[in-house]
Length: 405
Ligand SMILES: NC(=O)c1ccc[n+]([C@@H]2O[C@H](COP(=O)([O-])OP(=O)(O)OC[C@H]3O[C@@H](n4cnc5c(N)ncnc54)[C@H](O)[C@@H]3O)[C@@H](O)[C@H]2O)c1
Image 1 (cartoon, rainbow, N blue to C red):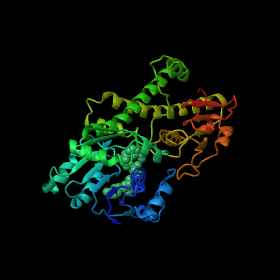
Image 2: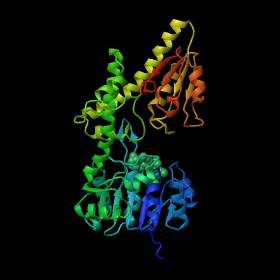
Image 3: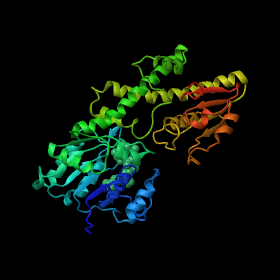
Image 4: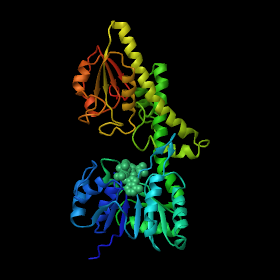
């Protein structure tokens, strides 16, 4: 059996590792690369370093059968996939230095007809930039490689299913590259594969998340207007959505997570004048979190004036969306921090039923918090909270529709 890897997967995180396991499951040799030696050791032991249903079994099998191996350095292969982080630097500027460094690492290994694919969420033009980098270093290969961009759109928690069944958008820097990338993905993916160019594929990923952000911003803007106009926003949206062609999303305490709250900035940073709505949506969704923290502050003062004592406050939820344990870019966490910064000898009960402990917040059981708090602030619509019976004497600030939906 020829054990030479056919695929090198660079970046073995939430996306790279499941993708590596999927490819290895097709009896294709995958050489996974990660700069974190701990990640490499864990994977080579047939274990996983992230939480994702069914991934543990897939990685254990792939490693046991010899189709997946991890290392801190790349080796020669036929296809190279770049699945490294693309965070921010400075003031909401995308940082593609991880993509660049991963690319530099494989440039000496490239040979004619190889396939190079970026899957990392990337600003428009990144694939072309990497192509120029590669051909500057290896001019003899100019036009002889296949270079493409193919974004990932899986939902954490359902990655192993969605990796296979979601449609994919594949954009090469030329038609030959697009076709070669499509031939690669069709071995593993059952969803439809849609051909385009690299720039459109890059933009497509950014637009998918910006579209969600803009639609949520509309709902959040309505919630601000309704608060001033003394209208129940949940009832309003429910009624407006009875129109056959209207579908307004639900407001919340902001927008979080590592995609929707981040990717729109990749457009705004490069096209600030043209991306007015996209930029404004980011501002509105961020402002909504600030507004929620201010509302808690005012409720505290009103309580003190009315009752002549300080209230106790239950902050219900820290995750960035309902029923998950992920706190990345979480508006609820931001609000909790802001509220605690303004603390003035009140008692606080911080609740997050999906995590056991937190390094900063002392967590309280959600039922205890709802019983003990004078002011109950619903930040995240976790399923546990919907079952709570809140007594009449409590002040309830419901930013996520727990009591109204
Ligand atoms: N997680 C998601 O749900 C999701 C969904 C769609 C798109 N994406 C995009 O996919 C990309 C990867 O995201 P992720 O969630 O898998 O990130 P992650 O942080 O979970 O994993 C990235 C891995 O890459 C490694 N790494 C960093 N630089 C490296 C280098 N030069 N060489 C080798 N390894 C390196 C890190 O150590 C880490 O283990 C990002 O661009 C992200 O925006 C993520």
